[in-house]
Image (cartoon, rainbow, N blue to C red; front, top):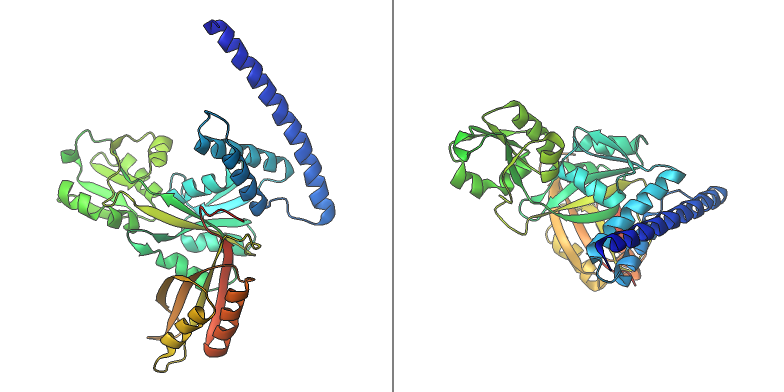
Length: 358
């Protein structure tokens, strides 16, 4: 076939795709009516996850598998906007890694609301200004994001989903050379993730903490001798050159984001449960509590302690366990915890990031 013939074939296929998208949108309108009649919410994240898993597994020949998920996420996001745009609050401004995570989770058609602080994201969901919130909760290099953990322990919201996002930190600046950079702006977590690189390459530069990596990029735009550590998306949105890419100290740097909601997720068979508990102040209390999980056959994948904020030197333990709160082993462990602990708070059961359901 000639080049013109090949291009005409592509045009015909694109026309077919557009016709199928029109059919899909018509069916979605019917789905929306059925959901409304049945009193069901317009957005069903578990159905979305199952659909993405199905199309990714089915594949499309030479078409890249990871791109299938990206394409279908946008198709579903656009179709959802026909029913009712889902509202999502994230730690802003635009260009933060939380913004990137939110777009990966909900697509471009969602209605996004920026929050200046992590507490602001929680507040937006609590007062129904947004249906969902997206916040970072843990980094593979620097550990927990304390503000998110503390806000979660205050209660009122649950973890509905999680996403582990590779975090590639870039040095953004209008300066042409590293030697011209006198100040580096960024969020404390980002500065910490690049501590070694900064010491080696910009040891004399002043480090300036900001509320987010995106706000750092805005500072760098206004400072001819400044640079920011942030995402390539922030650079694109602000027209700020990437002076150096992948400057994080560990190449496998990743951040775990969670979706906040008023309810957690139904059981999928590939779940995780997060809960907090406070112990009575007595010898061996923690050991006896940990034995509960072992006795119930529940794998404890993460544990940390946080000040309870009730009184000095009083702590709350935060744990992640494999399984859903409705699973027999997890339910048994929670029941026994309630008998032995001063307090127990379920913070959500939700599908594990990247896990495949039954």
